[in-house]
Length: 170
Image (cartoon, rainbow, N blue to C red; front, side, top):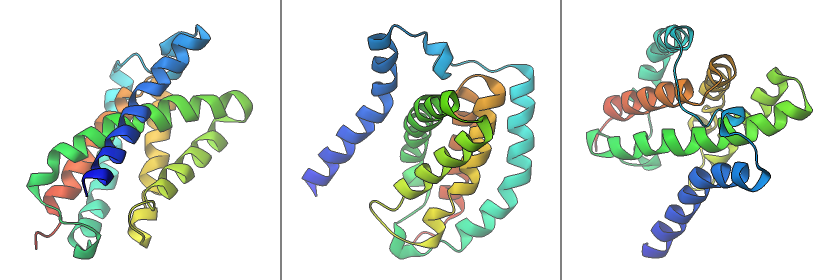
């Protein structure tokens, strides 16, 4: 158990800091990767619209979350917040930007969302874990439209808090 926690911490640190080191090593501006956090009026509006459209289905999913996939409840809020910062920095900041340089933005968003969803299967399997593909698309669009990972982080964090809060506690 301790080894798994250490491995998880190392992976999380890599995902959070690697994109910034990538920029430093390649002498590229972090803003290109959306790693300078900011929100425009438009991106604030986009986040609010995305939340309004997705929180109802997310509530249904959370209320039907199988307990064998992990204990949920208010005590897991910190993990949900941390995941938003870590995952958005890596997936939407670094990976999506790299893919957008090679292919069209929408295709990059789809591929990044697929990788994001599949990464949720590393520890536990189940269709709801792969369902993260769909909010991944929304987060990719928010990152693309907003020019920063911040709108995606805000959306991701609120969705995680919402899901954890509404999920059944055993």
